Image (cartoon, rainbow, N blue to C red; front, side, top):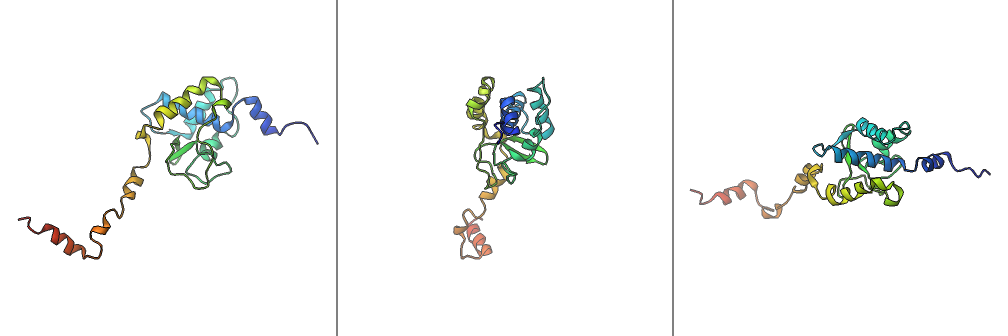
Amino acid sequence: MSNRPHPQAWRAAQAGIRLADEVWIATALLHREHPDRQDFSIQEIVDRARQERPDRDVRAGVEMHVSYHSVANKRPNPSDHRMLYATGRGTRRLYRPGDRADPLRKGKITPRRDRIPPRYHVLLDWYENEFVKDGSNRDDSLELILALQGLGSEIWQGEDPDRYVQRLREGWD
């Protein structure tokens, strides 16, 4: 039995930051740098992750995390993180608590503060204090409208709809 760590664990330790956390950081940086944008392409996120590592190539797996592993509203494949939200085909934004997520995804939403370099701690503060509270980027307007379905139906329950409208219009002359 070898004392060497698993190759993935060794690479993660060498990199000093987990792939999912790297993706979250890149996406948060994009949101901060482009507050007028609601989402970003997968390639933009990968490119932003690359900018944070100018001395090395972007690590294998970053694109998979942006595409699948960290996307809340996709089936877990295999990771169950909820760090990103797919706003469309090939576009992502940071996940917000309350966003629709696959029920099998129960994983983390943000990096742990003690597992990312201190220079990124400001991103966690920004996320909690501004991004989560600012619902302007939320992709739930359709869900809010659909939630109204059936609201007030007890008013006309057991009554013919035409007769109900006719009764409401009595005395409108």
